[in-house]
Length: 312
Image (tube, rainbow, N blue to C red):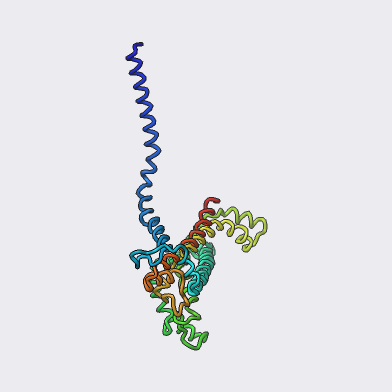
């Protein structure tokens, strides 16, 4: 074999090897090209604003001052010394925990009812439509509905006075005693359908053989519910409860459209507290610090959610 032929063969082998390497590199890069648009939008719409808010929280007079200075954690110290901030934290936790607990209880009760074979199928279909109605309304519509229902001259007071449960017109959203409870009740009414639909799907996925085997072993209905239904639904319950906690922590439209955080801070939650700092007092640095506080709590719940999903 001549020298020219050997050189040609080696050149072709190198070219072929480069082609294979180039193909492998392209094959590895293709998935990144697919996720690149979503990654860009995530950075533009979420990551960049989060970093900006974090930077504002470490500055004095962010946005309002041309030469805002770096003050470190001073804004956090300021809001932590504000009694209204801690009042809003307590009320946010009450609002969130009560909503999550009763969303679960009501959603589970309705899911069991809609899954029961003892109820006529036609009635179950009608109830399914009625029970899911709150999910169809926006937060603004829900706020208007409950402001009308809980008005001093509204339907709720009329019914309660007719039944002699109360003897005067209660100002549900205007009283410091009842405003937070009324607001929480409205949010519970608006949010239980998510649990109901999710748990109903979970109930329909439980094998009937488990109940039949438990019945043969002499288990009653309560024991079947405790040892079969609840354990089977537990992954769904934990997942949806953590998500609900994160969402409810940040509820703003319903609170703002019903009470606006009043009366006298009786329904002030972290979202309205932050909004007022930013757009009523123009304290954007302190508002950013409050927003970061909300983010930290939400991220904590998100961590447990992701950990639970990985465990599954």
